[in-house]
Image (cartoon, rainbow, N blue to C red; front, top):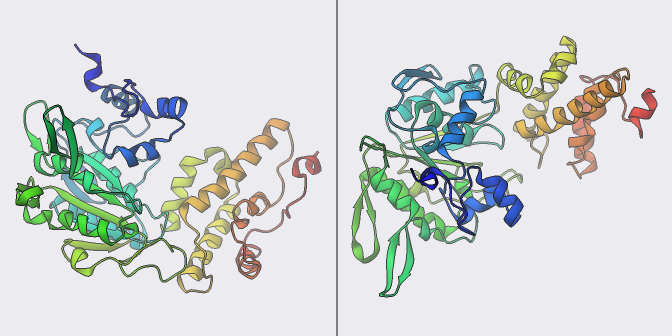
Length: 399
């Protein structure tokens, strides 16, 4: 058996590696994300390795042929589609079950089950891309992700010029092949893809017009060179994500966002605005990500943290904290710093400082360059995260 058949091949040097990201960084100084910008949809991990890693994870993949309830919606799991053909399952992902976001995701899950296209927009860190990754992996729906980067020619996603000794010709791109052929399993069955276009509001006018074909693909046709048309495999799901709703940035937080032609968005079946996670869901996620820290925090500290996060986000939503965003990623950066400090204190045999969260708040407060805004955010924190003023050398002061 040819071992290279299911092993990713580096598009830069041609070498085969079961885990391509490590090779990319060592040999080319490039991240997997940068590589995928040049080679959209290219595999980066072998099917065997992906399945092996998934089997070891705490959240095991559902059995093939079974059904799964995603956000309460019962959905069949596709037979014959390996996890390596799906979007990768996000680490520590948990389907929200509380608040407005849980309701949005339930409607989204129903739309995906019915084969609808969807446009999801909202603040950074609300899980817009993650929900599609999770749905793809758990339902075994083959998926590809394409990320918009301003100024990049995305026509090659559909067609690209190829050269032979007989001349040039138009070669089908990764996206067009996925749209018309789907994923062909070992039994010969064609499975419709989920096509995720991320950062859709970063598209310039030319890119958006190219992607009009994606929006129109629900009608089953894609126009090619010379007027040739290609039939899109029925059931193909086109999903778009963005930080803004299509009218450009009005908050000052996403200045690279562009307005999107309404006639393009109107072709998408359903639109969803994702708010931030309800704290009841978010605390379960951070509990999984930072188990040592969560064990050491008192119940009062956990409650105060939840109140502080909710208050900051409320003020952001009301426009009281302009040009500032407190995403789940920001929260994780904060807790990561607290977890790092805590483990160091434990290793040194020191006593945990009062107000550990307040001590480490500067790790994300330093992102705020405007003094008045920084002060306003600090006013939200102070009543909730009491004690623990930051010291020049904290570890030394604890000895």
